Amino acid sequence: MFKIVKKAYLTDNIVLMDILAPRIAKSCKPGQFVIVINDEKGERIPLTVTDYDADKGTVSIVFQTVGKSTNDLAKYNEGDFIESFVGPLGRPSDLCSLSVDELKAKKIIFIAGGVGTAPVYPQVKYLNSLGVDCDVIIGARSKNLLILTDEMEKVAGRLYIATDDGSYGFKGNGSQLLTKLVKEDGKSYSHAVVIGPMIMMKFTSMTTKELGIPTIVSLNPIMVDGTGMCGACRVTVGGEVKFACVDGPEFDGHAVNYDEAMRRQAMYKTEEGRALLAEAEKNDNHKCGCGGGK
Image (cartoon, rainbow, N blue to C red; front, side, top):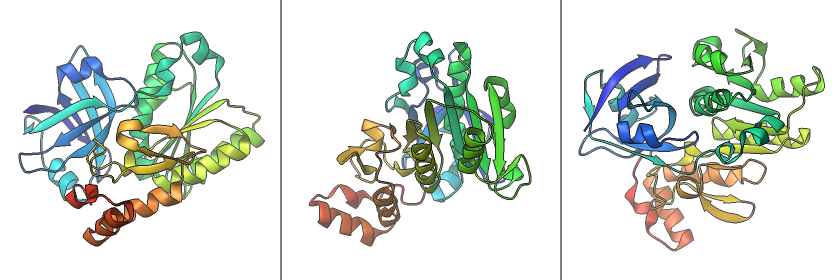
């Protein structure tokens, strides 16, 4: 059992929780994720780590209430216990494998969309702890949907905000703001990290490709059970089959077949869709149905 030591609503349906998990807090690296199970009958919920504090023994998670499991999790309060909290899982960010000199030689830009701001934050905080400067774009549909802007401002070299409706910052999406920074403001970048909804990562990766910026994306949004057993996060990257949970969650953003991944994601939400995938791929990994609408 794992104790919830902090709970806060970042928006009407986006929740931050700090979980007391000392072993995980000491082992976490930016880019990794955890599996949360609410109770003994609960489904597996994969969530990218938002922050971790080895001294306090806490791990922070941020989730949006989009289905039964996440809505149930949102009902838990400070002092309550969840059944299971497993991690860290997945491969750490590629940035963790580089030396400080190598990182400082790069011109890094992060583009976060919506809840994607949560997994971007630990990477930016990690770079800041090493004295590495980077730029960050946070995009959302409107001002009231922005999250972690104050926290990000403290660790980013420069923080840019974009809202689709123009209610705060640049009017437009993160991809359009990136184009402005490069083509109009004379900024240049040698490395981009893009995290957000699949459709956002697809079109932002198209933009970075046009701008000649090598790009990493996180495919956490398509994960279901976090082990590769269910087959939901199967994705083609550079013509090779990968699984987001065991091979990722980070991949070359210019090599991901987004359309295929989004089709699979939509199909996996229904029993009929899982059956079709199982037949097409000649396996029964899809029959579990776990997490169809977390």
